[in-house]
Image (cartoon, rainbow, N blue to C red; front, side, top):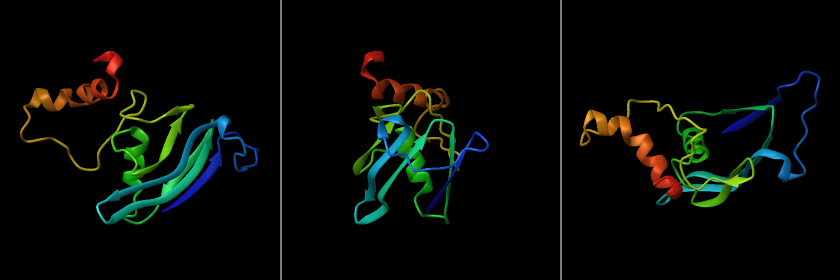
Length: 129
């Protein structure tokens, strides 16, 4: 997996963020394992406001796993993800997920499938439960 970044404002140089408190997104030593299989190993980077980041790589390298952790759908095995100074601990209202394949749970009714994101947000945010 490779990450390429480009500042949104023309003419600005791209430099590493030295003060993590100014980062819009901060990934610190993130790891995600499924048993013995490491999908993500020790990934760290920062993205400033108005910065554009692309994540590229072959199938199965961990891109979707990383995005699901950013959205709070999956939790890292180790490390932390911080968005706007707040640690990601569950699904986030401001991040939507579009799955690569249809994700309908056959044991749920149509209505229950439609309401699943609302139920996940409520479970991740006890003040709205």
